[in-house]
Length: 230
Image (cartoon, rainbow, N blue to C red; front, side, top):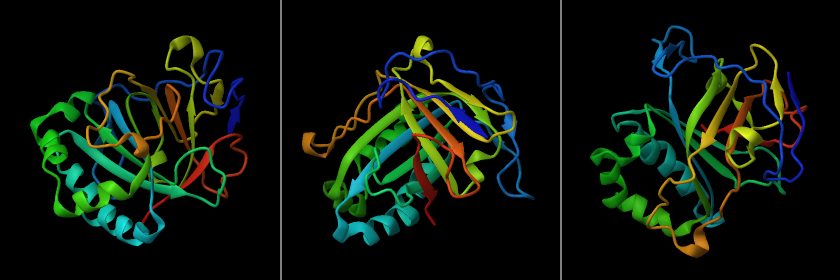
């Protein structure tokens, strides 16, 4: 169970120490989310992408993401996994409708020739989708805490908090065994060159916290409720 004391402002402000314990060292392995699967390498870095999409393209967008875009990125050496989420019944949510998370061996994967090739030479479908996306925000993070099989959960409560400094780490306490992810944003990460100014929305903060929720995503005060996309 998560006990959460929100900071003074929605996107940050002064905050006290956090009390989450490091679960795995970088490069360690962890059990896969599903029984019978081989262990997977623990991610040391995280790419988080938020966006909305024009309503008339939503079905096409989801098909492209599931069948082409995310699998394509997961074939890049060093991209360990990808997870897609959408808002769960929150019309006035603080964050955009879609969230995609990628686990990375390290943040240098995003500068590799294989990854840069995908950005610079997009598929025809990617070219078609780029102009209809909005409220885009891209965080590159270092993973600080990775506890339990949070990525196997169908529901995730998400916070974007603080500035990323040790002094204003999120004010939270996660009970032992609660599946969660805590990542520190790298503020010097390069933005996507193709995003127009009117498409961008700077999700503010320096810490990303995601806590798996087995039930109805209640009891996670201030978190934005997301569910896994098919």
